[in-house]
Picture 1: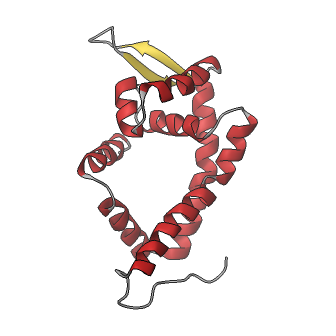
Picture 2: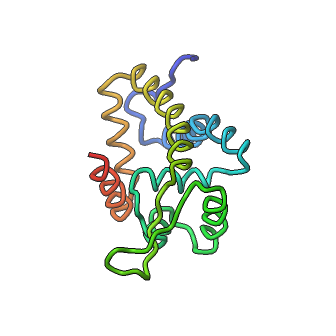
Length: 165
């Protein structure tokens, strides 16, 4: 890796530093997901499919409505994605226990295997970055990312965190 650059001391609120932070989000996100994107492309899937697989791995049994809220997309957008995931036996729908009209979404065994494979590469990349940056920097990263969230998004984040403990 090339040298890490930082904004000049005490200038973190200047436009160039704020834009630099936004550039970091953009390029890190693109780079971080590159290998997952390539693996998904081989299967005829894309990043939207990955987002659904990821959400269902974090919170199995989400309803379509809950998934729409987390992904902040329309029913029409998710319809095509879910149709493909269902057709490829990566996701299954089950009726609700209390309300059979509700449809809960779960990863199938194949869906779990694909999501675990994608996560393994992403985990390795995050672990490498965390190790290189150190514990204090990781804590700072978590703080900054949470401060970028609106309250409703932070509530969704907290739901994901509580589901994984």
